[in-house]
Length: 73
Image: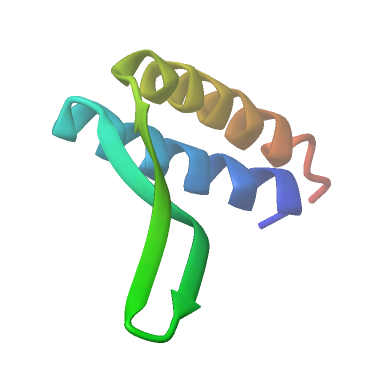
């Protein structure tokens, strides 16, 4: 399988997961400060909407078909 096909399959899987879950939320730790007894952490929360899943699915299918290309026998 070519690289485009492999990336396409990964995009299809990612898109399906996002659609099945109705979107994916995530938390990213940004800064951690430790001043002895005081510990502070700032976090960034985000959300990947289902529309991104649809776009990933369409792009993945396109890459899989593009990755197939013409095969000589």
